[in-house]
Image 1 (tube, rainbow, N blue to C red):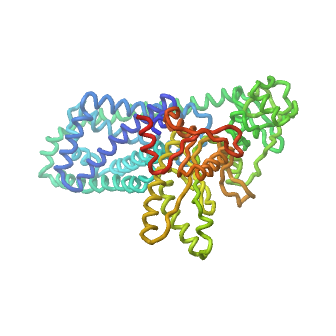
Image 2 (cartoon, helix red, strand yellow):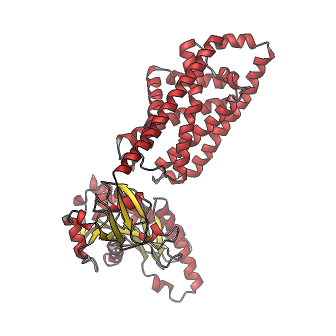
Image 3 (tube, rainbow, N blue to C red):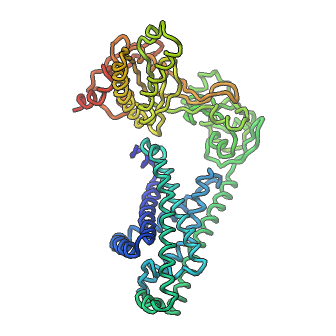
Length: 559
């Protein structure tokens, strides 16, 4: 998962790295402020300890490089965007990120800058006295909240696809609420104390001497520096807006008109595929395979302008031949219009809100797990229906947490069995999660059978089949009554593997595709090849007598 998270261009990686540096700094900074709630001495000591790192040469270089690069790359990304349309969470994070420098620049000028240029002792009491009886106190409190919310949102968006992050979310949410509350409480407590000493007169002279309080001229120069830095930021913001507008105008001049029968007319930049143009223009366009040219669900009839398109490349031609397409039919994901077109979408969404995307489905390469109880029909014979349901629910209560804790979800229950799906951004992570779940199910089954034995009941035996392949996930059914499900040949293969465990007398069969995707050398494992009913090609799979022993089996063969 870590490798998947770090895939992408260097800009994304740099933004993540610099964001983590700044969030770490903010975390300890806010903890430091919060210590004012407990003890002024603890607050001062912790600040001194922090500044050993942050004000060293390496620490300063890292911190201020992050402080420049992080917003700089954010402005760069804004300038390069095709549209400002974004999800509300992304929009909120962006707005907060743009507002932060408006207050942060003043904070930096009157702390680190004043310390380096004028020798000011910018410890927390000095900072609090400086802003306490002015609107700056409220503004810096809002800055604290903006920085923390922006950072927490960025951290969540980065880690939300990892399996281990999901169980931590409730704890991290509590921490996210505690930190700013603790910091503001410390700010309020220390502010009352130090401001009382400062205004009553007896400690004022000593405090000003200790702070090396700036002169009037120094303050004037600090305000001038603040205005200069703010002007530079506003200039950069203006340049970002100008670059965005300029790019939009250039794209509009290079745009090509696309008219959809039974739909709108849009203008889109040349060089994009017709499918990309549809998505950029907000036109719903079916594409199960995500634009790979395999499913043909994005195909269109070119009513006008077809003569301007080059002939289909071999992959597109083969896909069109499979569906016996006429000469004026093309795949939207493969053509790149250079002149106006009028097209008719062969598969048009039904227009219902919240249904258009899910009902089309998405193609993914994921691991799936089939599980079935052996001999359950014979066991249930003669029992009351209530007793059968009670036993099944006890069984599922025991083994389903083993699936969900590994990042899997139960797609459907099949009487005395189930089908589980392991959604992940990469096939490798999906395969790893499926293997972890299979082993966890085996351990959970052993514990459950021990409970049955203690109650004098016979044990339960199971069969599990695990496979990885291309699946289509989507809603199937009438509008408004269409549950999400998965279809594809890989589902049948996993089901056949599970059925084969009964003949072999084992609990688990894992296809070679799962093992290879998870990073195991399947050539060194005792695989068997099976010709499964309904599966066109022979399938190699690893039989495991007891699912709980899977980790030992894999470790032993790989050593």
